[in-house]
Amino acid sequence: MASMRDIKRRIKSVNSTRQITKAMNLVASSKLNKAKLRMEGTKPFAEETRKVIAEIGSSMGGLDHPLFGKQPDGKKTLIIVITSDKGLCGGYNSAVCKEAMSLCEGRDVKLITIGSKGRDFFRRRNMNIDRSVVGISERFDYNDASAIGSRALKLFKDKEVDSVYLVYTRFISSISSTPKVIRLLPVDADDFKDEVSHKNVLTLYEPSEEQVLDYVVPRYVNTVVFGGMVESSVCELGARMAAMDAATDNAEEMIENLNLLYNRVRQGAITQEITEIVSGSNALE
Image (cartoon, rainbow, N blue to C red; front, side):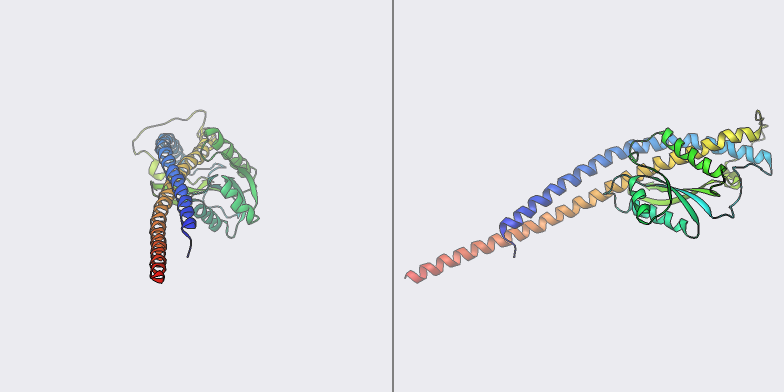
């Protein structure tokens, strides 16, 4: 059985860990509230962009545009994967990486990874990483998303890939999230049917519908990537908050068990000392 000194040292160590996990839980909780506000602020622009694409698509009838199309026949695919730069967030990173891996099956894949965890995951599997962006999972802006979206558009227009997908984590609640896959390119007009206004309004697009789409679609791609980064950031913080809360509870339970063990060992030592004193006294009589 461990000595009292060893148990006290273990209690001190676990208590230090508990303080760290509790502090990390509070920090994640504070950042989560700010990230939620940011997520809510990105939705209106994305919704309006979708409405413009939907209205143009419905007015053009049989839409013929290089960035539009149905499910492509080719297997050359670009996958944008959003993960975190830090760990200690439960299964957040592994879930989105597994979702991306399932999408890779049977395809000639290029990857753009956002976050060091995704980069390291696919490097270990010798995957073709076209671009890796790290150090921005908590501090990023629209320009970061725009650079990634522009790279995706270039690869698609140059016919180096037939399709572009985004794999990120969808926010459900502060303690619940799920990996999600979105096809960015080619854009399927049928995906926007619900966005079409049913009002009988005649809209004129200048200089033409095609040129408006040339302007809107890249911004739509950038906005979806940015929205995925924002939502993934919220999910990362929620996962970290939940993981640190569980770690704190486990540490407290471990400390309670170690204190109980310490008291038993201490009581045993005291009993042994009393027994030795009584035995020595009886020997002298």
